[in-house]
Length: 153
Length: 81
Image (cartoon, rainbow over all chains, first blue to last red; front, side, top):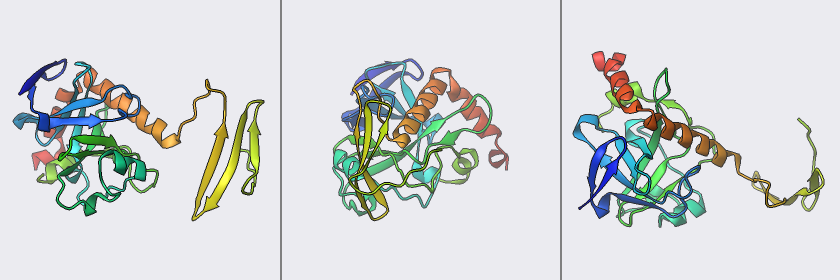
């Protein structure tokens, strides 16, 4: 058990199994390699990704199934290799793979989730990547409030 | 927008020192080779868009959006039902 003093969520305790290791960071945050996934009862089903190197950097995310039940994550060969998958998350039988979408809360208007760039997290190894989907069909600003309330996840 | 037709192996020049060559065309995809000075940023557009969304998401967290998010969800029509 280790702890980090987050600038936004107070002191967070985490275990090795809660860590996401991004071998090349995230777009705009290329030097941020390790995040802890934090879930709190009072803010479920949201999952916070707290940077271990920058206490002030955190993302609010949701498991994609809370936002889009029939979501299909398609990974490029490079992204799949980074998280140790064969290119199709659905085919990764036996591995604990999570798909989180990053939430943006605008000053006004509905919060949105970025379905075009999901975070794929292989919990078996801790390897994670933000997979950028060039294929259209999903929105980078998918409104979430009703979906989260309506979906048990 | 300037529109040009190019075949495999042909190039387009941008200014004096940027060259974009069509290396391969197959199955609805184009493989491009780009020669540019190191100070010129070359990005797939979707990466730049993901970067902009990540920055906005992180900025909202830094501005204390978590409480607003929870309030929005509690006040949403779905939550009141």
